[in-house]
Amino acid sequence: MKAMIFAAGRGERMRPLTDTTPKPLLKVRGRPLIVWHILNLVKAGITEIVINHAHLGDQIEAALGDGSQFGAKLLYSREEQALETAGGIAQARHLLGEEPFVAISGDIYVPYFDFQQVKDVLHDKDMWGNPYPADKRDICWLYMVPNPDWHPEGDFGMTMYSLTNDGSPKWTFGNIGVYRMEMFDRVAAGDYAKLGPLIREYADKKQVGGEVYEGEWHNVGTVSQLDLLNAPLAALAPAGKGVQ
Image 1 (spheres, rainbow, N blue to C red):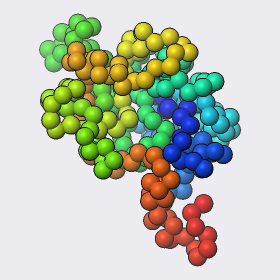
Image 2 (tube, rainbow, N blue to C red):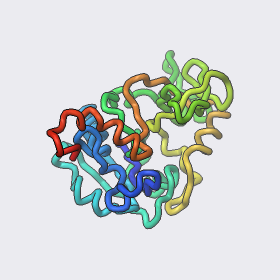
Image 3 (spheres, one colour):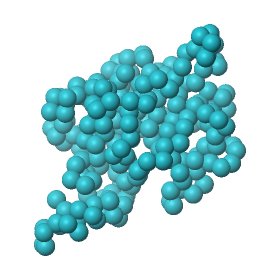
């Protein structure tokens, strides 16, 4: 299985930090956000990783290189302007191939997520070994998290292991998902396209599976959120040094 890390966003709410540093290279607890993902993927045996980038993308390539320092093989999908998530996947399709892949946002901090679990969540056969018709099997599998304070309404309801656009309670999409490439057949390379509408379309068809992840998870969206995550390190740093 291959992985994709979304790293093309501008990070407007993280300015002025992101004026000079791409958001995925901002450090949390001493390590760039994107490196947490790379190391956790490699730990699970997922070593072929595609990273898309736009804003200050050269810095990302310079910092991470070919991935050998992490035991990974990194490939880069360059975008002149950020194409959003579905557009980024379509642009990188030639690098990802046609098999199911896992994708994760480069601006979340989820240090203990075990990527081993993503390898077998999309099933082609039922428990009796009968093949699912293409329109009955899950097109994607999403990891949901308890609703954070800044998103109390959540995104999707859940019935057993299927996600719904209605229903209660709702959970928040944790920006980690496993996808079949056929989900993006209608998105051409170079198109600007968001992932959310596609997910909702297939949720209506009952083809979106998912489960709740209740481990440590943070969406690092603002400078204050970044500072809060780094506060334990700041408390331990020598006087006058702060967090590097």
